Length: 289
Length: 289
Image (tube, rainbow over all chains, first blue to last red; front, side, top):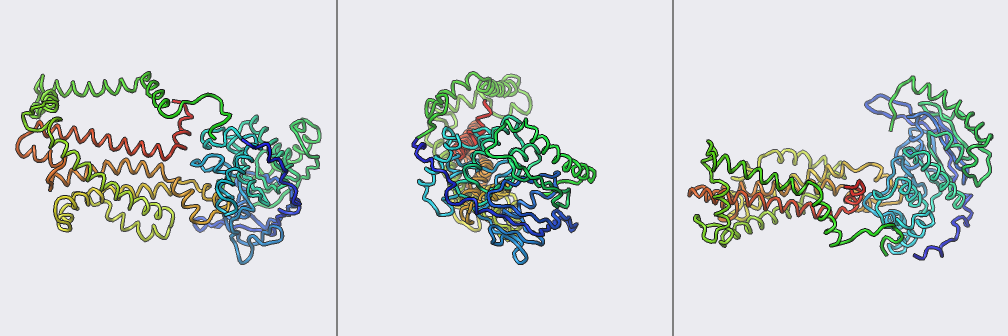
């Protein structure tokens, strides 16, 4: 493989000016069986370009609803979401178009099981007509090796570990040079050790690409370890309850986890989240999609 | 450029086949299969030829059938060494293959579109669901009225029976595809046709092949029914014709032949499925047999 040659960082083209998300007064009402359920209530949030924005909150609070609205999977009831000043969805257009400028990494992983890792990664540029198959594959293989996955490029997702699959899924997103990476609890089902490896590799990717990251999680340590800001959401209907600024320098590594600074931030966030978790638990409602 | 850097030396091709065969001989599977067949033959023999228990003594016994089957000079005129035995097998096989192929060519696309497009399903599903429960034998008179000769009505019936099964399973296959694959395809910039080719078709293959295995069985079933009612050649005809002239030995021979040929055809469909779904076989293979 001739992978060593492609080492140019993807950061050059002033990456830090793209990927600003502006969420303004977004409300979402679900209407299952005629019973209106307010999932997101008048939620506003400004995310700066190249920010790592972590969203935490109790189960079923409407975090994923927000992500789905940005990605164009679900409509919003009112409000507006902009990406770099252009409206994604708003008053006359409740459902955003789906596009490769906002790529989602899913909770349970959504690599196509019928394609090899290399073909999965090459998929985006091919269907968008940006590259022919051979070029896309070549680039895919080189990006996979950068992520330490050169040995498994020709394997199917079912043949590799979940950690490798998830890393490949992030590569599949990055090959499109997206403005925003939307991650919906991508490491939820992983054990602590795998998780910490995933975190370091995501930070490495971030330091290299400076892509804006919108990351939903339940794991507060994960949120503070990775994020620039942690947005604590209230229980349903979701509003922003508290914003924790994480002013810890990058690049970060796992030694941070045992620092005093880190623990204070976790504690601060935990108190805010716990309060909401209790409310959510007492309400005893089922999670919405 | 294949699996470079992967540890171990996995055998490929014929070597792999030998390895698998060797391994399977170490499991109880083949011996249990032989023991099962042996036990069945023994029971048949005891009931029929040794103890002569009612009503089993009325039918030809295993020794009688096998002797006749292997005889160069069969008492009732048909054995492995006579031409008409093979003509009957060939005629039935040809009809099944034509019927099954037609049903697949028509049923798979219909099912794919039904599963993919809600609107298309709304149009077609009620018709399909009304026609599908009609037993294939109820179609026999209609087939005879519609088509002349022996060949066309028989193939028509086999096609029809197999078509319903294939279409329905394919539709269920599309509906079984996890929503996140559609979403992933969407946010990677796919157009509708890309989604169809890269998600709908491969994602429904497991169900399609389950359907095809059932549908080839159904094709045999309806073919034989049709041949027994109106036919000139074929295994179904052979059964009926031998019955009419009290050649019960030949009749049982035809029945067993039908069983064997049916088994072989569905094994062929299964093998084709495994070939087209290597991703699945490999993922399942990770479980380690």
